[in-house]
Image (tube, rainbow, N blue to C red):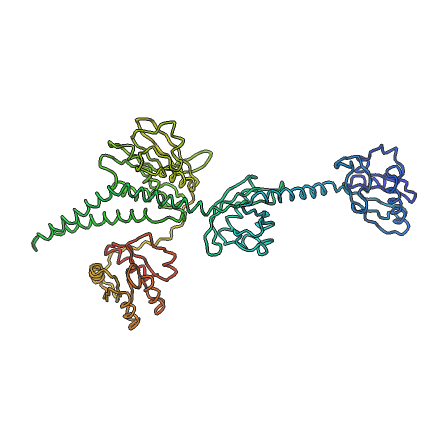
Length: 618
C-alpha cells in the first residue's frame, strides 16, 4: 500500500480538510473535502506555494517548518490567519471562506494541516449582530410599550426600557431569572404556556392579564412572537390597558344600570302584584276564626309562595346590579339562563310572550355569571323595543359542534320584531350606535354584548329580515367540567337541636322572628339589637354560647367587625353572618376573617337550620 492510499484510508472521507506536507512544503496528500474546494485542479498543485503567495506563504511555511523541527502543534485561528487555504466557495464579499485549523506533526516527518469551515458560525454571528441592532431599533420604536425577550424556558433575556414603571420587579432582579422566580404562579404558568404555544405554532399570540404593582392593579395586553428561526426565543410586546379596562367597566356598569332602569317598570309592576297577594291573604287570614284552621293554613301557604317569588326577584336584581370584576370561572350556563328568565318574565309587558328551550346538559363555559345575565337582558330589552305592539321572544340553549372549531354552547335569542336593515347591520355592535330616539338608549347594549362574548373567546351570528324579526346566535367554547365540591345536606328532621345562640340584628322585627324560628328549632336564644352590647355580653361569658349569628349591616360596629373581635376571644366558635345583599359579599374577605357561613336574607326555617348545621361541621 503506497502513502496516498494509506493516508486516504485514514483521512479520505473526513468532514474536515486534511493536507499533509513534508519539510519542503511538498503536498503529500489532500483529502476529498479539500480537493473538492480547490480553485485549481488537484494535479496542478504539488506544493503549498501553489496555494499561497506573499505574506501568507511565508507565514504558513514558517509554521510548517517549526512543527516538523520542534514537534510542536500550532493553532490556526481566524485572528492570526484570516484564512488558511484560499478555497473556491465564495460566501463573503472578499471571496474567501472563514476557516479555523491546526498544524501538527504526523509520522514524525510530516506536517498535518487540519482545516475546519467556520463560515456558518461567522454568518450566524453576523446575523445575530445585525438582529441585535435591528432589535435595538425596534425597541426604541415602542416608546409606550414594554418589550421583553425570553427563551423557551421562560427565562428573561432582555428588557426594554430598563426603567419602565410597568416592571413587576427591577431589571437587575429579573434578567437571567425564570418566570416562576419572578411572577405569581398563575401568571407564570400563563406566560410559559403562551411561549410554548407561540413557538409550536410559529405565530403571534395575544393575552390579557392583570398584575398588582406598587399596590395598584394594572391590566396589560401582551403580544408574543417568535424571534429566532430555531424556535428558542420570543419577544413580548406589552401595553398598559388599565385606563381602557376602567373605561370599559364604567361603560358596562352604566349600560347595566340603563338596562335595569328600562326593566324597572315591569319589575315594579310584578313586585306590586306579589305584595297584593301577601296583603290580601294576610287580611283574609285575620278574618278567620279558630274553627277555620285549613283555610288559615291555605292563606299562609299562599303568602309563603308569594314571598318566595319576591325573594327570587330581589335576588336576581341584586345579582345583576352588582359590579363585575370579570373573575371568569367554569360555569353551567343553563342554570344562569334559567334563573335570569324568571326576572325577564317579571319585567316584560304582558303582550310579549317568552318561549324557551334550555337544555340542562349543555357543556360548561368560562365566563362571569353576571355578564351572561347581562347578555340575555340586553338582547331581550332590544327585542322588546322592536315589538311595541307585542310579539314572541324565543330563547334557546343547546350544544353545538363545529367540525373546524370544536364544541360550543349555542345561545340564541330570536324576536318577531321589525328587523334590522342591511345597511346598518354592520354597525349594530359599534359603541354608541343606536337607531332609537334621543333619550331612549345609549347605544351601548349590543356593544357590551359583543365585548363580553369576545372576552369569552366566543362569536356572534346575526340574521334579520325586515318585518319578520331578528335572531342573535351566540357561540361559547365548551371547557371541561369543574370539580364538584359542594356538600349536599339533607334535612329530614330539623328539630330537637341543642345549644345556645347569641343572635344580633338591629331591626327589631327581624330580631323577634329569627329568635322564634331558632327556638322552634330547639335552640336557646339570647338576642340583642346592638353589636357593641353583644360583644360586651360575649366577653363576660364567652364559653356559654355555641353559635353566634349576626347581621352584617349594622351601625357603629358591623357584623364583620364583630366577628373579628369574637373570634379573637374564641377562635373556634361557629359564626354565621346574615345579609340582604347576597352575592355582593366578598367571600374571600369573609373566609379570611374566619366566618363559618353566610346566610342570605330572607331565609326560610330550613335554610337557617342548614346553615347552622354546616357551620357546626366546618
